[in-house]
Image 1 (spheres, chains in turn green, blue):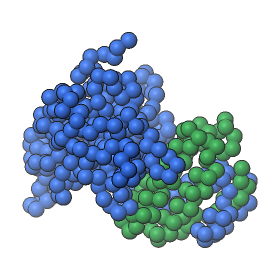
Image 2: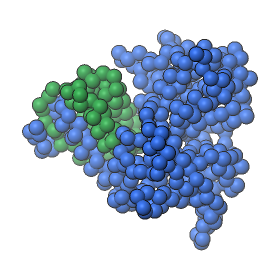
Image 3: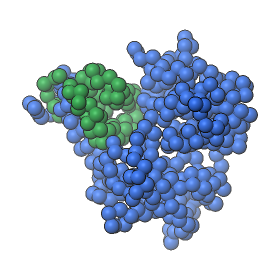
Image 4: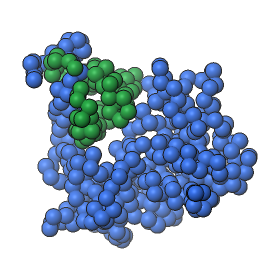
Length: 89
Length: 342
């Protein structure tokens, strides 16, 4: 993600594979906990905004999205996602 | 490189996951698994098959209007885009005395591709045959116009698409109401007095859901005048009722940005206003100002986004439910004002 040249491709990949599932997960978790749904949608919006306009913020916004996604997965009875592990960037 | 793909508790993941591309891949993989499980649970997992999602809101008998359906693969990996498909409508019943025999087919219409805002599609491709594409390539719905339903109750649309020398069909169910309390074309616009940017008593997030923390209200030009004052000034008004952060429509697009772009271009000749849907999303509290437009009674089935166009007399002359392309919005403005100066 740190490569500026990858940002457009990363944005496309995010939109194609994560955008709608995040919406679906938010809708599902909103049935049981709207605060968790709010945090998830805010985190998703932050990542999409950073992909568009502030790539330097992506590291932080992805971290927040990871947490929010795990929280929502747990709240809806799904397994938290496996960690992709810490190279950082 | 992936150093550790073993499952960890959420708290550990927060500490361990680095802000790398791999983190995004992990999110995607987990969500794909979740979506797949949900799809199977819903009986939708038919690889390659199309799923239809009716995208229209507020369908009411004897009111000709736009009817929209979004089409995507069951695994949600691709959407159908470009060209035209056909819609065939059948009446299912009123929900109380459901007709279980042959469905009454009422008629068929052609429906063209309507992209959500924010995409730069090649016109030749867009006018070509339907194709299954990734959402980042093209996203939208198929729309038929002047569709009128004569009976209230439950209906089914069968969508037929010709692609790659094969015919795909899928169905979607929807409800047509006897009447509706939502503001409609030809009616006086609600004289809404919404809170404005800078109001010290109002959470900026309830003005625009993207605001909050260090983030200011993104489009102050859309939050400096009440609807009531705009109408009282004898100016046409375009109102977008939307929630950029909390949108749950499958066809969410940057419609608020599209209206803002028009405000920058035409703001000297008419008013452009954004009403944020949520006063507090987490608490399930609608903004009263938005509710006047999209949920005027407790019984109203909500839906967002909406765009309403109001003439200088304060009458609603056009409205767009859920999806409006940049071309749709520009045409609506130019219908009121004529082409942009310069």
